[in-house]
Length: 284
Length: 294
Image (cartoon, rainbow over all chains, first blue to last red; front, side, top):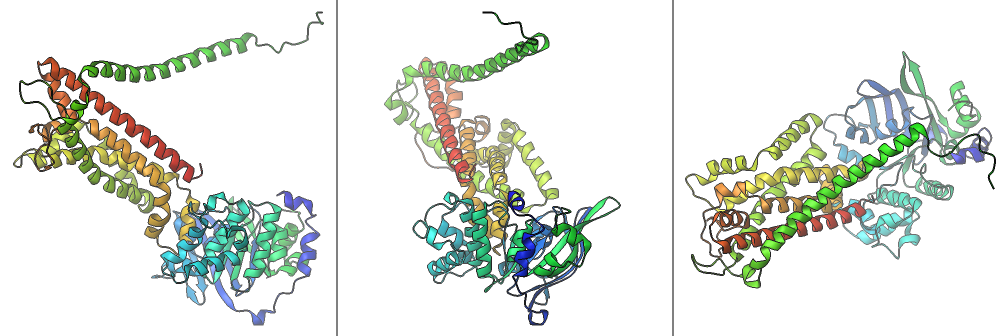
């Protein structure tokens, strides 16, 4: 977390956040309507009773201390938690009005519409081209595949760096390039939502800044949800920020949503003392 | 120029000196044990090679056995037969073994996977002579011996080996890779076929090659299923075919000195094949590791 230290935490996020204007709530188009979401792993409750709406073409950031369930929460938005044995989801996640946990819903179909990029870049051990082309190919989007690959790589701000070596292994790319390749891979199948789970936490500041610039561009076409442990990052990129925290009852630690508001409000005028403590660096 | 003696010594003393001695002793014992293993291998190969030397010739590899009582002849029919039997066994065991491994690592819940795993381990421990008798009762009684009965017995020996090796490789695939492909809205089996299998191909092939090497030398399963054969070169798998392990066994029981030499020669052919197979497996594994970025 060296990048957290270089800028005093209680000054920079505020200044950055103040420069942004968030559209008034009446103009927002709801993509996700999450109602009383509780996720448990066996006997432990990761998050409990979360109510939250996510809006179209905005960047929504989830911040909070480690272990507060923000990753669990974002992974429940495209049913990636299904892959964790023992994970159980209660409550509703309405995506465009449909509960993605309803009976008969195929998680594969959900993930097709709601893409995800992970903390650590995970390119396939294939060529750069095939990394991007594999998803569309498997999903039957085989028309103009070359154009699709170029568009996705351009969209991920990677095209100029790799256009001459598309047949080279994706593992030959640098960490930042690999992460942008994963973003290209995710947008190649044209999802509506992009979930980013700490996408820059393993990257150096230059690569991080490239990813953040990219998010601003992508938000025109996609709804973006990002989990980050880096407050400056949330302040720089997000329109709305949700602060999660840990609540300890009877020795059990449970993640809860403390406050959800436009980013500038979270960083300048938080409504909850816990949020204030966290964003001013007194806690976490 | 002797300086004033220091207040403390940095050289080992007392307890530390004893520990260093014990440590060095244990290291030497370990080194000797390793040397012994290597030594045994070289002894086996060396003694077989020395005794096989008189029998070796181009004709030995390319001629069928001589008619009874006549000199010369080779083991070409046994090489052809062994190749056919092992190829058949591989064709039976590898697809099933890999499918089992994929099922256990990618699809089955732990409750289902654990008993199946146990069964495979037990199958791996079944003495091969028992496998031979089992197949004898199943396929040979009433139908007679045949190459495919032998191949089936060998396939039973190979199955747990292939499956176990494939599982080990599949477990090496990072979870992130699985998540990456599933997050694209790709179904599970497409992820397996498109991402996981290509990544693990080298490792699975390694396991298969090692199982082939093992099966090529198995004698007991073939004694009951494929040991009474016409010594001529044949590719008819519905009859028993000559094969190297049984040939070594029967020739070494004969009173004829020439046949003893031929048995040693056949043993050398078998050892060389197994060595080559192991080296191939090693190379394939290295390639697979590179692909996984380890």
